[in-house]
Image (tube, rainbow, N blue to C red; front, side, top):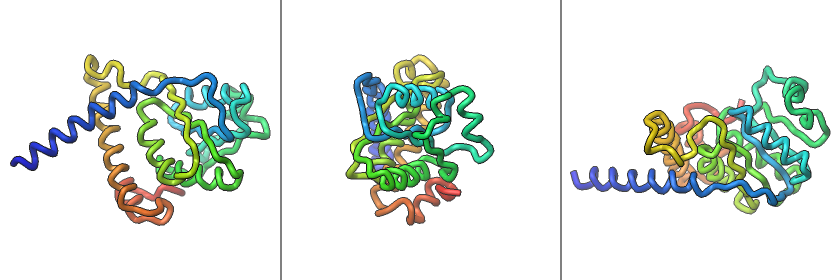
Length: 201
């Protein structure tokens, strides 16, 4: 019984720390890196990343997790910078683990040492965890995107936001557990076990 109570308290404290971490992410309007990686999952993510590229904040950009049915031309309709030569599209990643694997391949092929990481605020802890696990030698600079999803600042007053963040926290804890016992996500059975499917198509 004491063990269950202890674990409950530990998870509760962890959730509080998780939310405070979300609140600590701020946009750095001066940050520059070798590359930009943006994870699909919200139109505003690509829009923000496109602005960063247009401002010359990095040499190239990777959009990872693009739907196989989506073409570069379709994305470029709303984000013209995507039509340029400095944007790469990844169609293989199926989840955040896959995003990290494909990002590692892209970083290695371009010999990059630093990345601006663009994704929704709530998704940043898990994204940075996966990228740090796959790319321990690369400097990661988070760029939070806030667009209609809980960012942690209003979770106490919003039941839906609370449920959303609790689920994201559970996925973060699972990713933290997995990355602590595996050497490489690309060849790990745990990536499939914890993610429910293969990380790449």
